[in-house]
Length: 137
Image (cartoon, rainbow, N blue to C red):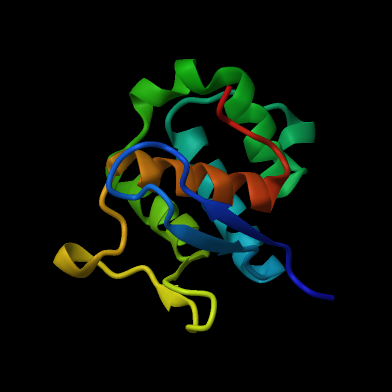
């Protein structure tokens, strides 16, 4: 079966306006490991996670974060969170032009993303694609 994809054109004003990105759902193996690492990080942060949410994988992570993120956020460890956010960005590719192959997002000065808000939006869109839940709103 084909993995889900989402094409996103940046509509916000700024340097990324009009840029197109394609987000592709990771493999079930990658998603499972990502969910496990999220759960471990949240439990280390002191989160009390209901059993039904723990058993729901990444969808459970999304359910938990959408209801309790403000209570957990102050306890999160950036050193644990950063690689998880990097894995979300690994799902994102840049479409320079319709006839060109998709490009991996580069780091540093060569990065195709110019706005911090775009990076946040892409991570949230990747999370939503994987889980089916939106954390924004």
